[in-house]
Length: 490
Ligand code: GBH
Picture (cartoon, rainbow, N blue to C red):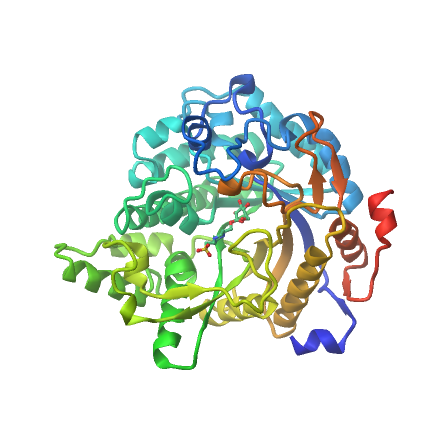
């Protein structure tokens, strides 16, 4: 905002941490090596690749399964304080269950973690970033309430193996994307498309799975392992498209569906799903002839069990949408469905800078509003920005990405200066990777990866040089410049 223009060089607070992130299926490759079992993403890409824009798979991806050691060297050169990555559940437990523990999978993560620590880079580990073991999906995945036990059993193995070395845990990456995109639509595996039904069953089960593993850690591991555990929620800012009450309500509904659905039960004083979400789904369900709301009830025990079950809030934030209400659009969404329950229309603004990913526009003030709302609504929780980043179609001179990072970090500093309790920031992504339905076409890396090269050569982009300087100086200098020649021909 205005502040960033006033001060060309701004310091980050004492102790603020900088990291970069990846996720197992998006970077590891080695999909069936050394005893790894299949996941729903192996199944999707192998059985019906048609929804993937370039027909690609994560079979090899950025090959971090083999390149972890030189990758840590790159992270060290970049100066990262921490590296956020996820564990592939089926690499550790090929069947999904703890009857078989795959020692080679354990060794892989153990080597990576040990190498990170040797180089003074903290591991921040996500337990689940969308790659459910295939067997568990056959049993219904997150639509089966037993997922809570399965997830706990998996987490137990992980805490036992790595908990002495890992001090930052994230249970689940982006519950809404798991539930709405995977179960309530076809946007992500398992593409269940049980609109208006499965995404809400999933929401309850995801929240309980998260809370179960939080309590497991809190009661059985924290006293000896002394780490912190939280959840990462994707937060888009929804800005009313006009000043009408209707558009303000539409934007508020969109926020509560998108992230309030998951943050409110954990971080609000009262717990439970947000009232507006409960009301919207209950009214629509009734109109449609359902005997109960399609949004499952959380019992008073469950509300208490979920409330407070996080040491910090992980925020993944990328963009902003204009939001309005339009009664004439009745019939636009399937019935029943999440989109129909929300009945808000979300659009882009042609004046905002556009990334390679169609959904992604640069709106730093929207990021500021997210951070301010979270501070206000949930009593200023400890926040880690666990993802933020920009996609291009390629190239090493990524001035648009540099600008995106700088302006978003400026917005973050605005929020910090107003009191937001933000502990750290994570660039998505360290490497170009398998960008889900966009395959390898949307490139998010601050390091380029050459996917045509069997060696998967990595090259730092201009943004990596700029990020390195931000980390080194612990400050944001809008005038710091990197000569393009040093980027292209180092
Ligand atoms: C993250 O999700 C993921 O955690 C990560 O794996 C992924 O690679 C990264 O972002 C980049 O995509 O506006 O209706 O078109 C980001 C989640 C994805 C949520 C796009 C909103 C747009 C839906 N966001 N999605 S829409």
